Image 1 (tube, rainbow, N blue to C red):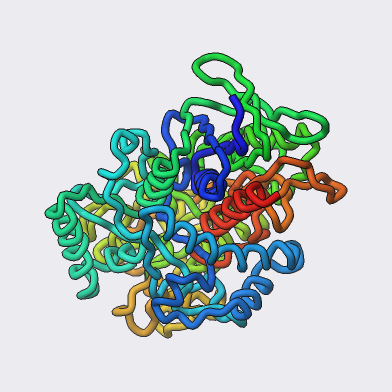
Image 2: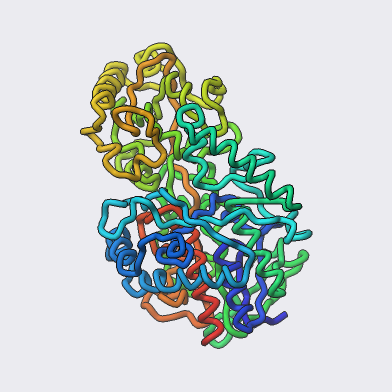
Length: 538
């Protein structure tokens, strides 16, 4: 078995790389460890952070390379090279244009979803993220059955986009909440009446990429895990994989692209590289992401970077798995407290920043405190306002703050004092301690009907609830160090010939930060595209 390009992993990075190689005249194959394709991409909301692309410009977004570069340089700092940062900003728009040409994917601007640090120079308070429009799954034929399921399946009879969640959370508070709930049903009915089987978000993105591969004649071999890289004369010349129960060699004339995801489900690697407490039970990444590609690269001399970091986010451990706590923590009427009963962070800050603080100050676990007023007002996970929290969702419930404190092992006087202080600030509309609400990002998943601040409301109506918060993630962000052409580097900076990496198998171009919604997928697709182009032109 021999191809020009062998791609490991059928997520956004791998499928983009394979499609780029194929549409530039190369023979390509994708091998995928799982019995399904799509990886973490298919499970995601599918926000894509690629500045200055044609979708944004057509929507009238006043973005430029210069604005994006100024902003990204401030966000990621000196740890990411200028060459690699520029490669992302130059090739990202090209990747989007390429996918618009060669796949059925169409994208929309996520209007109003801010960059995560919109007050920085070049930041955009109205956002520069895009997401896929609904895709007709019928075009996938039999491959629809092989699509990895979503992390949060949308309700039957609806078509939901990322930008809808903000308003669905406010269904009991804002006219746009009910209007959005109506729209997601009408969207489905309209597409269904046309004979379509609409899918959205990560399902649409992964499905659209797979449709592109079908049209290009690129095979995707499922149940085919990578065992090792194959070397010849000092270069990567293929892979050794397991296929149909047998070890097989698949040769690559031009090279191998590793897009096999991170190592979030490899407990040994997490404990080796990341701070305690850590494990595999708090991640929502694809279950097959166990670092196989990263370790294969390391065996051949690849340098590794950012292995201590992840795409973090506060999680609530629930009986059916961890829940990525997004709007639930940023809506007014919540606080995070440590085991001393004190606040320690802006609860509405970018989710990766919140977990960085949890680790830096060792506030693990911490507690999210809410009251019945909060429960009456807002959607929580998929639970409608007013409905009671299931008893196995929260750690404690009590009719007094002091009683709640004793149930979670927190000093009662300290928690009472914290709540009183926060309530006074909430009534005044300004958080003088942690500046929640000062950034326009804080207000995105907040409540514009809440006065005087959309981000702050007192915790006053019993009963009171305490939810356990742990450091979860969307996946790890450390991996093989690459250059501006997505080529894997050795520790001395020289290139390993024939080896490329993209997505969470590579050290993130975002460094230790997170520029905006889709900072995982945007670079993954960009450097997948970059690798495919380099294979075709080298």
